[in-house]
Length: 157
Image 1 (cartoon, rainbow, N blue to C red):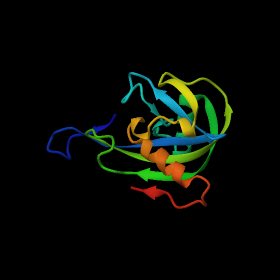
Image 2 (image 1 turned 120 degrees about the vertical axis):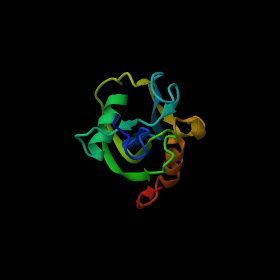
Image 3 (image 1 turned 90 degrees about the vertical axis):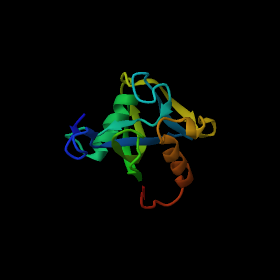
Image 4 (image 1 turned 45 degrees about the vertical axis):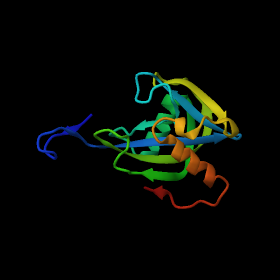
């Protein structure tokens, strides 16, 4: 992780990071991952996603994270939300999140060590949204409200 000391009078401050998340629905179920214990908010269910790598764009990043964490490939349908709130994730850094709606294509592998479980959860049996990792529940709620509606510009916060 890159840190910067000149902005805050010699006190290290983490830079902003870009994260991507995939909202993937199939047959009335959302694809969720259980975060491994060694990760932030380990043990909680959340959206597949993670940090953008230096050599990729947003779409490449979300599709890579989807494949790594779930074993699924997909196709990006659109951008649901850009979350740039400065308190995200409530640490001395800011993660700017891009939440994409992704159509699942095929299962091509197994999840990596960042996921202890991968599950297609029927929407009517989702865990309480406020129990999902970080603020993923907010993104799921926005997605559920927007389902079946004509495409709208992404929500930018």
